[in-house]
Image (cartoon, rainbow, N blue to C red; front, side, top):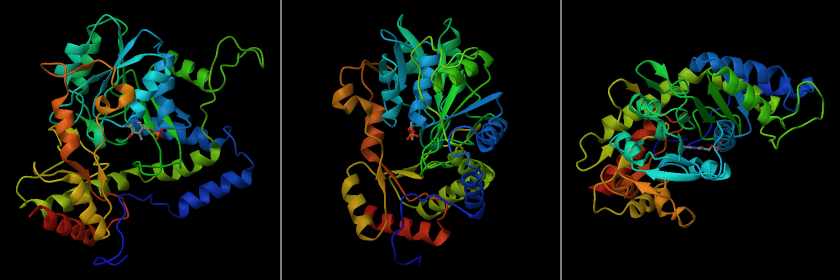
Length: 374
Ligand SMILES: *Cc1c(COP(=O)(O)O)cnc(C)c1O
């Protein structure tokens, strides 16, 4: 696409010849459902990449979260702490498990504020679900320390947007009891629809494998003792995922390059801020995001960019602003509100960030944004 005209999408998957070859091979083999060599290879390679003992492929990121919570024993009457600023699926998974989300504010890294988590923890707290928002790792050391104060309090990483992100040299997905990834079409790598669970806990891994596949007895075929799920991924999806995983480091490098290009092009614009990257972390910049100057209408900027063929997305709507979550307890650092989450959501806009972008595309988008801000 020409750098001076044409539509620049917010994100588009990069699918190459190897993806096509693996998927064709899977189709030809006849192993089209959830048994097959690509499932095994994708799980094994993903576990190796993240640095954990177990990776379990599932149908999508939302059911990955639900399966983790269910397998950890989260049930009706329990509370699960989630950040106020995230995609709705984080809270929906908690509700599917029958529990109540407790919405906590975020901090300067745009992720769950450990100070708010500490205030939110109560007798009913069963789990904490930090989200690595837009590719930045949540403060897993502080959150892990809070969780370890309490017996049997689990942490579940929502790593749906952060494949390859690192916290002090360790990959997200290896920093909690269990982690959930998504392979939706716009994520760091894709299987079309798909998800993955990672854990070092042998017992939990076995339980999640059992529950994702109807909970059938290992000893006696078609014999079941509890309500379970069909949350399986297909061998076809895993074939696509394996080819994507084989070049994940190139995708992450490209995401980081796109961020740097925006950073360089926008560094002289007053009143804006780009994604944070806390010292000791590797942000994978799933989206390059901009906080617009206060007083400027985010939606008006977005509309003007759209007229110039530049696709954007607003930040997620804070969960506390959604009618079906209005009853949820909310906790900030010092009161019962989430001011930081609301402020970010009001000012934040995601810029085109797909791995197919060239530097010229990024510079054109940045120039157009400058024109709106000045
Ligand atoms: C994408 C996403 C999910 C859900 O993943 P799906 O595969 O779409 O079900 C959950 N949490 C966050 C933070 C996400 O961005």
